[in-house]
Every structure is written in structure tokens, then in C-alpha cells.
Image 1: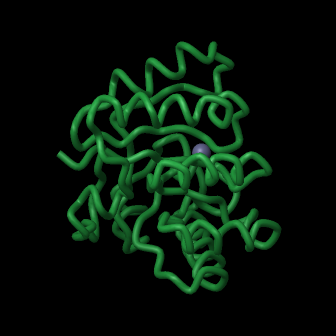
Image 2: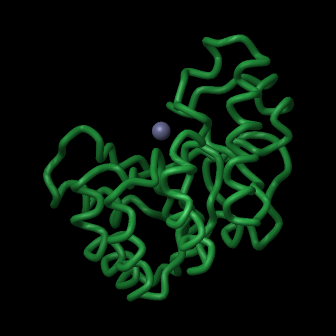
Length: 192
Ligand code: ZN
């Protein structure tokens, strides 16, 4: 299964990277283009430690609500900002709020990677609720959505990883979830 973190990087991200490294686990970070300059070192650390750095738009608009050319520029500029700093190709994007149109996906040239497990970590839920959602709702092939800007997600990361590892899951990137053959188009909620 694949853990994914949206909306970062942030000052909470290094702790999550430490926790992933201590368990030899990999994750996928859907980062925002406007944060690339400030957090370039963190983007490079993600890549160096075996994680994927992917595209979550420039500044998180509702993409279907803005003109198509602006939506596509949001995605294109973010890909450029990430690739400039990491030297790695961006191969997928996650539309903010999970909102997209067929024209946005086809125009982006990237697959839209959604999720099948949503922890709703941003709703200020209790830590034990967050842990149980992330650990117990996961299935083989699952893509779990969390945010590396949320204190509860950073605080509970170790317990979530240990709970998933105890259930026998391998914690892999989204690319690994697809056996290294990432779809080149379409919208995907899991690797099943
Ligand atoms: Zn987001």
C-alpha cells in the first residue's frame, strides 16, 4: 500500500521523513509548487531517501473553477519547479480537493492519483481516530491520504507505520504500487 502526503512540504515534514527512514518505508509526497523554492532541500532529501515528489498544483486552487489554461499552467509550473530542484521526472499529479475534469487530466499529460482511504486528518480529529483510520481501512493496493502540514499526522506517523507493518503491509511509493508502470493518463483511486 502507498502512504501519500499532500500540501507540503512544511516544517513538520523532516520528522515524518525521519520516521519513514527508521522503518525503511517509502511514501509519495504531493507537494505544492509555491513551496518548492523555500523547501528545495527537503524535496531533494525526499528523493535521496527513496520517496517520490509529485505534483499537487502551484497554490491549491479548485482546478475546475478556473480557466483551463490556468489550471494547466498550475500543473506545468509545479512540475517544472519540482524537476528543477530534484532532477527527477514528475510522473503524476493529485488534484486539490480531488477535483478535476477530463480536459485537465488529458491536458496535463499526467495521471490523476486520488485515494481510497481518507484519514480526514485536517478535521482536528483525535490521534487514536487518525491512527485507526489509517491502519484499519487500508487494503492491499490502497492509497492513503494524509497531509504533512498537520500536527496530528506528524505526531502519529510512527504508530501508523508500525500498525500497518504489523498488518503485513509493505509501505511503498505510488509508482511501486503500480509495479513501476505508472499509468500515463486517467484517474486512479488505488493500485488494485
Ligand atoms: Zn491538498
